[in-house]
Amino acid sequence: MVLLEELLRCQLKEWYHLFQPHTIPTLFLPLPASFLSYLQGLSLSLSPDGSHSPSPAPFLLPTSASNSAFHKFPAHSTVPDPDSNFHSDSDSDSDSASEVKAPSFPELESEVEKSISALGGRVVPKLNWSAPKDATWMSPFGSLKCESFSEICLLLHSSDCIIHDLTEALPSSQDYAIQKQNEDEFQFFLALRKWVPDIRPEYEFRCFVRDKKLVGISQREVTAFYPSLLTHKDQIIDSIVDFFDQIVKPVFGSRDYTFDVYLTQKRKKVILVDFNPWGCFTLPLLFEWEELEQDREEVELRLVESNFAVRPGMKTAVPYDYLDTSEGSGWDEFFRKAELEIKRQIETGED
Image (cartoon, rainbow, N blue to C red; front, side):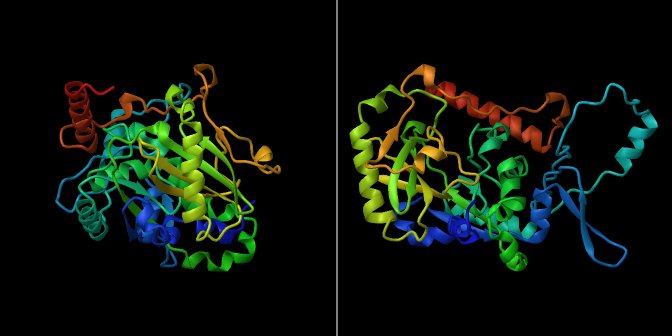
């Protein structure tokens, strides 16, 4: 298990200033407790003793500060139990009358919109450690690209990776029980990273550092075979090893960790994307943790070397019947943008 100190060191806000010239431009916004509760599907209700306590809440996209309201969508839709009784019309009327009012975060929304504008109009959202990469099925663009506060909320609220950051990341450290007294002082941030277009997934790599020595490099996108990579293995290794020796190793404080990089198409410039702790919830991709912990003389690069070696990806979907697609709703906007994106790809000849 990872030490809390090592886990905290991998937070984007902790390492960003050390490597700013070598990574993607990012802005950070502290998140209030009310928004954190919203992301976890909780509402803060007043207890009999006067304190606020969290309770389950339906998923509503926030009411925009520009007075554009979004409609309710259940956070965890489930197929009705066939053995249960159906609700009568009177039950539906009662439920409708007691609908929860959509939340509003005007100050945070204002800061988010300013940050999006400052970063060129398109951003990738992330919390302290994770991006909502498991929720891209919710995006009209089919990616992490966001152009508004509501799109960011939709991705964050739909992501198990984000819930992990909020509820499980800190307790996953082996000395968490000893350090727990500082938990109330911990600050969650929304990191907005500048959207970089035309990223080619075959040039993303995860690098494994054991005892301050680079021991392994894995293709990051393991769900596809890219034949061109096989002809550039030596160049890929040389570029990443030089970047590690000159930029990462002298500065980053942990002994064991991983870092993700992106190589430009000419495989000469290396862009630092992220740091992750060794083991823990970090995926070893084309390696196994046990073999990475063995003594190694040279850096090993592993690639998907044929279509037969491709690994399955995670697919996620939501039943269409559970969506509120009425005009003016968040889902109406979602499908409108999705349709425009499909038309754009057809017109530009993109896959």
